[in-house]
Image 1: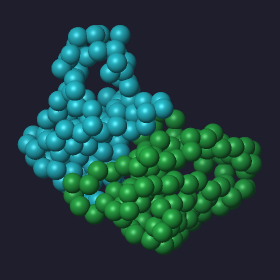
Image 2: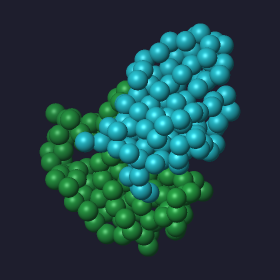
Image 3: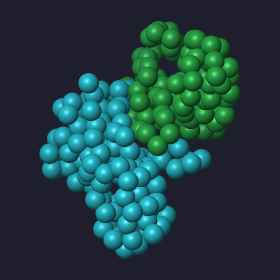
Image 4: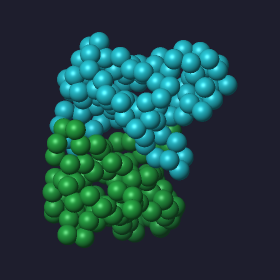
Amino acid sequence: DVKVTQSSRYLVKRTGEKVFLECVQDMDHENMFWYRQDPGLGLRLIYFSYDVKMKEKGDIPEGYSVSREKKERFSLILESASTNQTSMYLCASSRNRGTIYFGEGSWLTVV
Amino acid sequence: QKEVEQDPGPLSVPEGAIVSLNCTYSNSAFQYFMWYRQYSRKGPELLMYTYSSGNKEDGRFTAQVDKSSKYISLFIRDSQPSDSATYLCAMSGVNRDDKIIFGKGTRLHILP
C-alpha cells in the first residue's frame, strides 16, 4: 500500500519559532511536494523536489524552506513562524505524472 | 478564466442516489485527470485516475473525461453516508515540469 507519513498531525507553535514538518514516503518515489490547504483557497504548492538535494519553488514559497537529504524524506521548514502560516500542510509524492499521493496532513496553529 | 473550475457545493443527496460531480478546465494540454476524496481533517485520497479521454470504472465509481468539452465527471452509484466528503478534481499535462492543477473541491453530503 502507498504510504506517505507526516510525523506531526497537530502542532501549536509561537510566533517567531522555527518549525520543522517531516514527511517520509515508502514508495521509492522521485517526486515530493509540500502544499498548504486553506478554506476557500484550495491547495497551494509551496515547494517541490524531483530528486535528492534538489528543490524548486512552488506558488507560495515565501517564509518557507525545504530539505531533501534522502530520497524518501522531504522536510518543510518555517524559519520564523507567523500567524498567517496557521494552516493544514500536506506532503505528497509521485513517481509519474498524475498519480500523486498525499499524507494525512499536519495541522499547524501559530499563536 | 481559471484553469480548473469546480462547484464548491455543498451538494446534498439522499442515500442510494446517483451522485454526479464535475469539473471544467481551460487548458487543452491536460492529459492526466484525477479525482480525490478528502474526509474532514484528513489528507486527500486518490480515488480515480484517467489518462486522456474516456471512461474508467471502479466499483461504484465511474470517471469520465470529455476532452472536446473540457469537462470531467465523477459518478457515484448507490451512494452511502460514508461517501460524505469533499471531492477534488486534479489534472496535469504530460511533461514532468507540468504542474498539477487542483479544483477547490465539492462538499458532498449523503443523507441517510
